[in-house]
Each structure stands twice: as C-alpha cells, then as structure tokens.
Image (cartoon, one colour):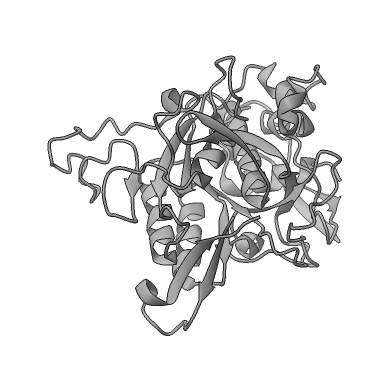
Length: 362
C-alpha cells in the first residue's frame, strides 16, 4: 500500500505531492436477471433491492461465485472443492467455482498502476499485455498515443517504455490478479487475463500523484478494462479527475482502503461513493485485519473486503513472497471484476460496482 502525503496543496504537483511505500445502513442496487439478450447490459430492467451495510466491512467479503453468476443472469454457482489451501484467498472468495464454469479472465486487460511489473517472471510473462499497434525499437509513435515504443506499458518515473518493477510491490499485486495457471508458484484470480504494467513508483516506493493520474489516463486510453490502485493518501483533484475519467469511459477502478487502521478509507478509495470500489482486508478467518481502514458510516460507499493477510504471490526474479495489506486485498477484487467481464463484457463500471456489493457475503 502506498501512502500519499501533501506538503502544500498550492505548490506544483511535481514538488508538493510525494508518495511513499506504506508498510505494513441500506444500499440500493440497480440489478435484474437478463432475458432475451443475456449479454447486453442495455437489456437490463432495473429493480431496487436493499443490502446491509456495516461500518467495519461495508457490504462484506467479495463473492466471485455470486458476482460472476449474477453478471450473466444465473443463480450463484455451485460450490466446488477448494483449489489449494496454500492459496487460501482464492477459496475464501469462491474463485474455483467460477473457473469450473469456464471463466478465467480471458480477453480482459487489467492495468496495474504501481511500482511496475516483472514482465519476465515465470508466472507472469505469458500474461503481459502487448501493444500490437506499436513497432518495438523503431523510435516512432506508431499508434500516435503520445508514447514511443510502449509495447508493454509505460514507465512514468523515468519516462521510458520499460515498466520493470525494481521494488516488488507491483509484481506481487499483478500475481494476485493474473499469475498463470502453470502448475507451479501460484495462480491468479483471473489467470487468463492480460496485465498492463504502468510504473508510477520508483525502487524506494516514491512517486507523484501527477504520475499516478497520468498512469490512469494512459491505461484507459490504451484499452484497460480494469484498473488496480493499491495506493493512497490525501485528496488531490488531478487524481480524482483521472478516476472519474476512467469510470466515465468504461474502466472499473479498484482501490485499496488503506493500512492506517482508521475508521474510513483514505483517498483515492474514499472516492468510491462516486467512482470505483474501495477494498479493505480480512484474514483467513474473515476477521478484519487490524491495519485495514474500515468502511465508515457512509453507506453510499462501494466498500467490500477481501483477503489481505499472509498473501502469497509473485515478486521479481522468479521469486515468491507473503505480504499483508489492503494492497493485497484490492487485486482480489480487481480479479473478480475481470472474471465478471470475461463472462459478460458489456457490464458498465456502475453495474460491476452494484453487483459486487450486492453479492458480497456479510
């Protein structure tokens, strides 16, 4: 989880907003089952239902089996045996039930806006997004997107086309979302999705909100369906505008709630009253992690919880590591949103938010 602090909001972004690595009521749902056009979001007819909101865990722990089934107008998928107790998080949110139905994130692009991603990792290399509109090495902006030779994302720290992770945080996040199902290491929630690496933090976990905002816009403009933000801090208009931009253009934004043990999320997760989903962390017993920021009293906040304690995932140089944090919880929800879109690519961000909160288990 990255913590963003503001020294003086009136100063230029490049000097005032610094990000650092941070260690360690009733909800109204617009929803219905699909009828004659099951894969068309425009065919929805809406009815209002009420779901219990809790000031600690919001709408509860995300349920992949319920959310993906609802996305295609089906009853919740039947339970199946646990995948592997070592990857306890997958079982906690009922991911194997979705895999059993044939959904694994295929054709969906997830932007990991973080410290970069080790795109050579044995569990990630085949699942890295590739920009086929660009010709690598010719020094020309072939797709006219403003970035030269950005074949696998962009590095906003050094302003280069190499988004390699020299910190480890982003690679760990990426593995939770889409580590390959190749019978070793670990497996991501949406193991057939594509990860778009967007590097906005350096090796020390330092960065600027201006770059984070640029990263969000880059991801949207280059086709990311899901955007994971395992970062947070003080409110800044530039980042809020970027998240609004993403939502209005069809990208679902998933944000870590923060690791301060506070009574409500920090920004940008606090923006989930309007855009995106805020995610807190629970342990293997479904207890809120001590460090996790809670949901707070505003039931309009799209807040759910997901596994965030002792999470095993990829780190650079073909290694693996256990980590704790809402930074680890958010990518589980990004993975669920990815599974939903692989089942029904016509879902809007608003529908994804509503379905995830409505089907969460309190």
